[in-house]
Length: 287
Image (cartoon, rainbow, N blue to C red; front, side, top):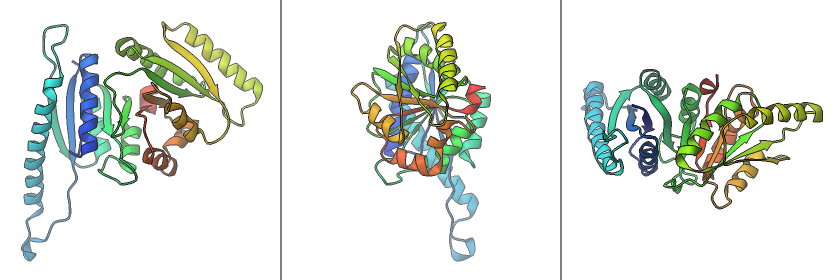
């Protein structure tokens, strides 16, 4: 059975993301796999009267196991029996070491549909799922990554905005979103970002080929619009402020226009004021 991989550090933001992941699992007929990466803290040396590194790690593992079990128990009532009569479930795992490497390993060995993680709240870093860890997870993931801000309510999704520059690689992401739209019954709006520097002929050819491909896809609730100019991040955020625009989605691959959105300086600014959830399609998913 498919799994929604939910990353948690037991913060309020992560708990909110876990409930969002459970909602998705219910609709996608999937299990929830909770994962916590132990981040060891400096310990007082034994000769100074402190615990050994082994004792510290062992204590953290026991504590985190209990927290994971409690979180799993709180999420199970939100799942329901699927069409086969077998009840979906919530599982949990924990690991020690680099978060992105462990996420990659889970994706390689488990049937993961999507990765869900919390974002920061306001301007204060509430948990480790921010900054470089966020970028690293996205760079190492072969599945879509949903970043959920604290105040987002995704119990029902009315619209998903997919930002595109009509690149060939966007087609796979759009096919995924069309299938997701059929299940979750949301409207998909593809917003073409008019990139400065493209000449009119190149832009028109890209648009023509892209629309030709879209025309062959089985979609019933999809529209295409365009935006121009600078300050794309702010304009996309403003677009997502419209009522009913729940998720902003885009592809992320090397040297793409949208890779700038994931540069440390730009993304930290964007996530600091993030209101809409971000659904990011990593490069490894698009190949």
